[in-house]
Length: 179
Length: 398
Image 1 (cartoon, one colour):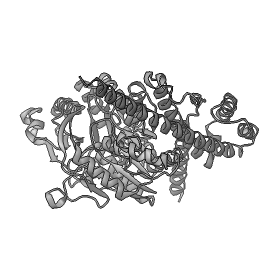
Image 2 (cartoon, helix red, strand yellow):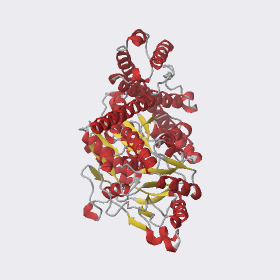
Image 3 (cartoon, rainbow over the protein chains, first blue to last red):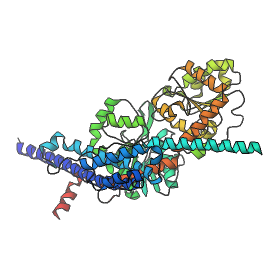
Image 4 (cartoon, rainbow over the protein chains, first blue to last red):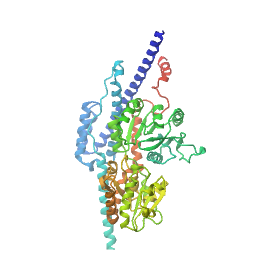
């Protein structure tokens, strides 16, 4: 019997599998880090757009100095900002840059949370745990912050436009009636 | 930006995903991006039909029953080789795959590519067990996707519940201009009232029999009422659902071109969407709204959302011909209400205009690129595949 051969072949397969898992984890970790940078960048843009509104200026600047988006301090500051923005109402949020930056933020945060979820689920699987893959880094943290209802902002604008259009038509009809 | 889009279904047959991919590609080109679409289709030289210039044919597709319809898919080593060559030639900044769960070109592209990958999910299938099983097997492929888009709230819910992920919700677009400016077909809508239906009338979930039943209830009291039907299928299938006396009042257009579809939607007083299920978004409703048609639709969740809870079109209980007949009767008798619904519809549809939607998709592309470490160009080199181990070791040892 060639038991040594069988064992060596089996070992090679196990090692290849573990190597494959390690590469997957390394790639996901790199993607999570890049997504975190992109999220921080986008939060900065949102904060600068929000700072144009006098009522939200202080809270917006405060977010910028409260650390990385995966910390509780930053997420708390972002929550405060969102709460303030919501209180200002949909009309105030309809400022040109702010709505677009908020939309991009929804995407950036989704991309980051997707990366975090994929990384966490792979790293907490049984085999990666047994082989101590990526033990040195702490598990990435989700970015879990309150969201603004952006569709409501756009629906509101459309309604305002429809009202304005109807009013303009009424004026048009009245003037053409007079002449 | 150089964008590579993969469509899983053949361009030789019309369908929602294909139309979405084509319109998205054209809107992106309109915004100044370079776009290449890879889709299963036969080369015109081999007997396939003429393809738009931005489409790369990936060969013949095989019909496979999927999600209640028949999908035409391309899958296998030959397709994989074509995908790799397309990726190498394209040097895309971002790869955008559609419906990567089904065994298709999209899935192959996910397997073959390395780089920023965006995936759009269209289906809102409820078959959770299949999805859950597929999901764990596909996790190594799905985790290569950098950003996910769902075309509807329902498709997003499928993501969250069964695929254990989120997605950015970006609705299907509609080329508003094309529909708003179309000229009605000669002789339509006429005086006696005209109803419209578009879709594969032989397919039960499209609900044509519900409409046929409602038409049979309305027609005796309304001698001028006519029905305009467009869509692929056997004409006898459609007519068999109706009493013999009413058949002359039905006009079947067969499969229509995009232009004729727009003209058809502008030719009716009320467009009817009697679907009984399986709809994730209801793109035909946005097209009807863009054409300025009044809509009567079954109150499926997807339709309710598109029609803004009934403010942009009338809703009736799904699958109930009597309720549909009642709803249609009211609309036909009230031109002012029809005009009001159509007007709200036209302002609602502005948010679905393709240039607006495509700009939001570009935002997702940019996020995906920003979230990609190192060189964000899509290549066909899979750094993870075991076959690259010798290369990897050589790099390390150097």
